[in-house]
Length: 174
Image 1: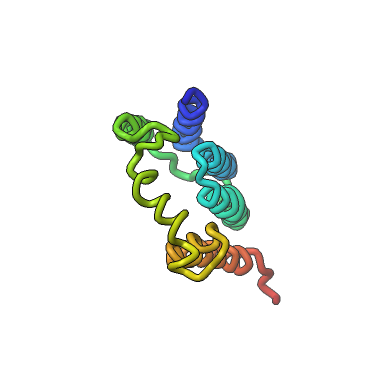
Image 2: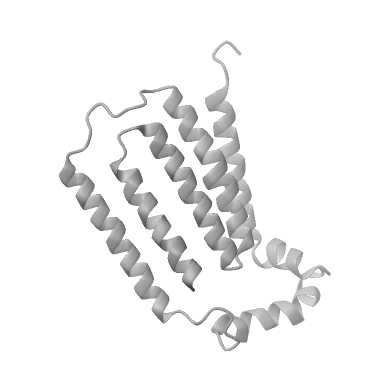
């Protein structure tokens, strides 16, 4: 639990720092770091598929896209936002964090065998997946059959981000 709180604190600090940055390149790098910390947080919560997507799309492709876009524009803000707007954005970040922490207080304990997901969903996947889907590997059955649209959506996001990266970085004479 302490590592989750530390990671959450780091995320809030990065978000507030990104709001106050005037250098867009530094802001893009900070947002890439934010995605990397989110991937670590997802891994710590045993959501490795979400962590992989966050690391590849959020920390990887999105950061490269931001840096490539900034390289084709101005690096610094021309008309920086008034201080009042940055304070409002910082308050929104802190308020969102408070709402998420409040929501976590109602969540079941991590690894709790009496949690609803462990009472209904997990036993069905374990006992019925090979019979219902015809796939012997339980992980493949969950990702390809039960969560097929979710996996298709993640794949589409990664493909689209890669295509945007190729289009953005290509040379004009090609």
